Image 1 (cartoon, rainbow, N blue to C red):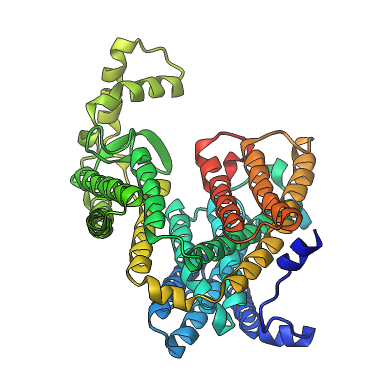
Image 2 (image 1 turned 45 degrees about the vertical axis):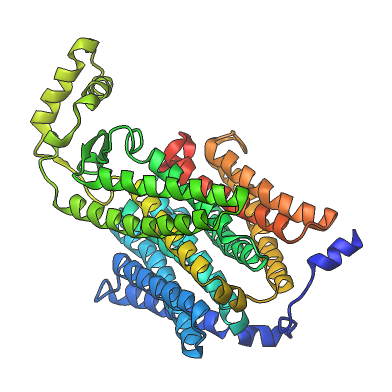
Length: 518
C-alpha cells in the first residue's frame, strides 16, 4: 500500500515550487482571466458595440483554438521555440474569448428578459440554460487546464493532443445554435450555476486527462496500427449510425428537415453525399481488414496497403465534409428530396402529433398532403443534424491526427517527456477531476431535492454522471490500493472520458429524461 502511494505521488522536476512561485508561474492564466474580465466589463458598461457579443467572441475563441491546435501539432514535428510561444499565446487568447463570450451570454440573457429582481432572478440568466452554453464551459475548462500545464515548455506536447478535441467540441456546440432558452421556474435556483459550472470545468479536466492517457500510450510504444484500428472502429460506428439507417443500405445521406426551429422526423436526401460516405466507409473497412491481417501474421505488404487506404480515407473524409457543407447551403426543393419509404412513418408521427386517427393505408397520402402544403416552410441548415455533423468532423480530425502521428512516429515519441512524468501528470489531472465530479453529483442531488423534491431519481443524466464518476474512482482505487500504473491506468482514463462524452452529449440526444432541457 505504501509503495503504491509513493509511486502515485511521483513528482516531475520543476513542479516543487513555493506558493508565491506557483502564483507567479501562472501569470499566463491570470492574464487570460484579467483580459476576459476586461471584455465582460466593457460589454456591461458599453453595450454590444463592435465584437462585444457572445457569437463574435465564441468565433474568435474557435479561431484561437484552431490556430493553437495547428501550431502545437506542428511543434511535435518541427521543434521551434517560436511555435511554443505562439501555441501558448493562441491557447490563452482562445480561453480569454471563450470565457468572456460565455459570461457575456449571461448579460445578454438578462437584458433580453429584463433582469428580474432578487438573487434567483440574477442566477436565472446564468449561461447554462441548454447544451450550447454548457459546451462553452466545457471547452473553457479544457483550455484553461491545458494553459496551466503547457506554460512550461516540457509539457507543450499536451496542447497538441487536447486542443484538436477542444476545436471539435466547440464546433459541435456552435452547430447546436446559440439561442437563449427560458428554463421552467422550478429550475430557478442558485444551485444551478454551482452544479453545472462544476460539471463544465470537471469535464474539461477530464478532456486533458484523456490527452495525457493517449500520450502515455504513444510513448509506451503502442503500435500505430492498433490506434488506427481503434479509430477505424469509431469510423464504422459513425457511418453505421448517421442518417436514418446508416449509409450502406441505400447509399444515401439525408439531413433532417425543420420548420422554424422545430426539427421533423423526416430527412431530405443530399445529392452526392451518400455515395462519397459509402466509398469512405469501404476504404476504412478495407484498411481495418488489412491491419488485422498484419496484426495476426506480420505481413508488411498488407500493412503498407492498409496505411494507403487509411490515408486515402482522410482525403475522402475531407471531400465528404466539403460536399456536405456545400449541399446544406445550396440544395433546395426539400419536399421532392424526401424518400418515399419515409412517408408512412412520417404520416404516423403527424397523426400522433395532431391527435388524429389515420388508418395505416392512408398514412402515406396524409404525409404527402402535409409535405405539399408545408413545402415553402421546410428547410435544412447546419443545425439540422448537429451531432451527426460533429461526429463526421471529429472522425476527420481523428483520421488526420493518427495518420500524421504514424507517419512521424519517431518525432512524436522524441517530443514526449519520459513515461514517469506523463504518468504523474495523468494522476494529478484525474486527482483534480475526481473531486469535481464528486461535487457534481452532490450539488446535483441538492438542486434536485430543491426543485423536484428528491435527491436521486435514476434519471438518465444522473446515471450517466454516476457511471463516469465510477470510472475515475476505479482509476484512483486501482492505482492507490493495487499499484496500477502505466497502460492500465491510461485505459481507465480513456474509458472515463468516453463516458463523460456520452453523458454530456449522448444522454441529451438519445435517452429521454428530466435533463432533456439541456
